[in-house]
Image (tube, rainbow, N blue to C red):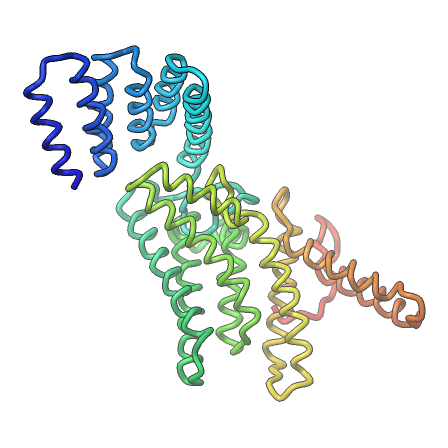
Length: 390
């Protein structure tokens, strides 16, 4: 019972005059405050300890622990340095490690807090931190909460969808997921781009927004009654954003644990460890799944579940994605990388001895046609006719 221990230490402090004993009692009460999550009170007791007995390494260590719990990592590092200075051998090495770890947390926190960490769904390490048009406002907090709720709805329905065997329930959860995905995109877009405007500039900003492909993809799946596999990359990316949102919300309760969770997200390649944005590997993995999904829906033509309308719309969606990547200077190109990886695999198979030359020739011509389909027109260049419904 930490509350009882804190009260007991308080009574002992009031009845004691010996400086040595007072230093130990304040240190012990600081430890109890730390266990009870009273970080400010713990820091106050630890500071009293160091003032009463400035040559006691344990007192400085206690102060370092309290400052670290408060998220004041540089102050924690300074306290641990002092503890190491007053110690020797194994204890000195341990305090030096605590100081290094605190400085690492400080660097992470600096990048983490300066980024627009949970800005509604468009932030990624590849694109950089996303701006927030409503930062610090009531509207911004409302949009953030609604986006968080939409993402939770996506993940909850996806889990239910994956284990459901009821056809009506599956269809209902599928639609709910898609509506929630589109809601998360719309809310995030408003936060990043601003309130909707009827202007060419606003439309250009929406199309260039990194969250646009997910919202557009969800819309395509909804109107064409798409299948399960194309849904996976959308949920995958949204789950990574949700992980970032959860860490951001947890930060208010424990900054240190939030940064450790961020480090875990980095180790799982979900998040960028410095900014909290979605890691580039998530975007590349999602793009690879999208390309495989595109091949899968073509294979579905040979099954009773074929959906020609969805095949056309989905490949048009991939084409639009590819063109937008090419038209974004300096932006990441995960879809292009995914197609390049697929091309390398197919080219390797066609180069195998015994493969008819006509297949290699046909594949080369197909690649040429597809390259023209996604080529970005240059200024002054005449428009080329394309087989496109978009």
